[in-house]
Amino acid sequence: MDEWREAIRRARDAMGWSRKQAADAAGIGEATIEAWETGGRHPKRENLLRYCEGLEMPVAERRPVLADAGFEPEANGPAGELQRRRRIGLRPYADEMEAYRWSFLLLDDYNDILAWNSVAEAVAELNFAEHFETLGERNVVWLAATAHFRKHLLNWMDLIGRQVSFWKMAHLSRPPDSETGEAGKGAAPLLQMMMALGSRFPEAFGDLLTLYQTVPVWREGNRNSHPVTWRVDDGTVLRFETVFRAWSDFDSLYAFDWHPANAETWRWVERTMRTREAHSREHWEPDLPVRWNEALRAFRERLDLSQAEFGARVGLSADAVYSLEKGRRRPRRDTVMTIVRTLQMDGPTTNFILEDLGMSPEPAWIARWMSGLDVAYHPNAAVYYLSAAELERDAERLPWPLFVFDADCRLIGGNTAARRFDPFPLPPFHETERGPHLLELVTSEGFRMHVENWDEVVLTLVPAPLKPFLNPTVTGGAGRAFEQAVAAVRRTPNGTAAIRDLIAAWEKRGARRADARVVFRLRWRHDDGTLLVFDGLVAGWNALDPYWVIDLHPGDAATFEWFERQWGEAPPGAPPWWFATPRTGER
Image (cartoon, rainbow, N blue to C red; front, side, top):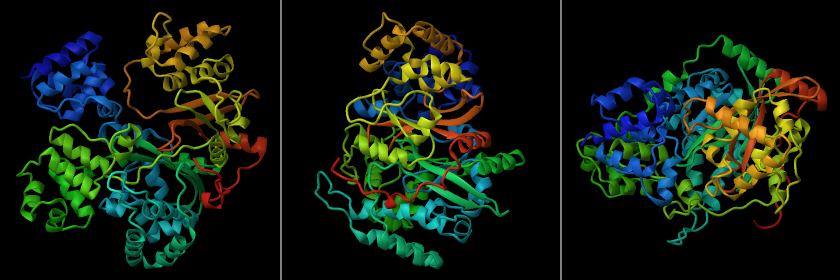
């Protein structure tokens, strides 16, 4: 026992790192690492695993470390690979969220707000934790139905109509369970939710009923993005482009980003944040459970069930539920998973309970489905593949520059805003033909000439683990598409120098957490001398298709004004998707 302490110390020494360097790489405090190595403290499983990953310990070395520390080792196969790609917990990412210059909300798969940043509080003009004390009250739809949000959200019907369309998809068009044959649950649960909303917020009930009767079912595959028009108390009308993006497929966590959509909104945000203290983190962090039994009780209360009702659903007595919630009885893994599958517990709660009990985390249904694992207990999983025409139509609906890539990092195409920005030639959307590889694009002479912070951007888009594959003596590990891209870059006149500069940038960069969200700032010097600034994000196109996208949201007022001078002011957001041209053909 305690051999794990010596193992992590040896691994740190092998990297040539001080405790401070290792702490920075893993996002863990230096004092904590010292306490682990010297025997002063025992880690949680998730933190020890994060540290081992930060030290770049292979799976074969991590497994005995976890076992010797008294934890379940990492799973093998697809489930193990999912765990290794996971973003662990929320607290390590608090500073990351607060660094975003746009309004940010973090949602679970119940659409409850778990975390937010100071910009979100400034826009909402209230503190979520103080005004809405429980997670259920911080559900985005329930929030929208309050008098405060109905007053400020000027396109309320459009935005809530999208959520109603999601509900209709989940309950009216759910495919049968692949194993049991159970059909979708139909309209009853959806009507129950709407009646509950209507009884709590009667002034919103008529609008909800109208939306239920008129809004069609959400079409799977469409990007979950929508314009928002918001009026703050001083009368200023703000415009945002909101996008739902995956934060952690493993835990079924979602980022809800509100990007300013015109120059006036950026000016308001920057002016407001200059005089506002950033304090969101200290408000939501205390809301996070400290022990597994607290998380279990909070989940039961979220469902508004008594201990007896909760127990009856999962096959436990009321006394057993009481003992669990008091921490007097530790559940077995099969007991936790029975609760998860019977009551469809959200991913963050599931894995907090499992890991606090020293057990390995469980992939959420979407992560399991994407890796070909069983999802019988969540019958809403289905296969969708967008055609090139559908990708193009949905891309054209979005007003910021975006670039779509396939699973091999080859460019598929971009929208009109991307063509106007013109960072590199865009191929037409096509079913089989693909454009250049991402590595070819970011190392091209034109891209390097225009991007003033090229080192920063390329280090974000081309991660350091690919470094060995730029060595021509190493083959076979990065995938055929990447090897072909490296060869193509080397054939260009300045390709060898570009790869040399990329390797040099990797060498200069210190330790960096590998699971951070892919967000970057792009400073582009246009041919006319104007400096354009973008907030770049990399994400999947949606949860079900094998495409991903680089979004470039204009990152200051001057960039919006440049676009307006070139092509006129942007329209006030795309129309709701249900007014778009109907789809044709089957996927």
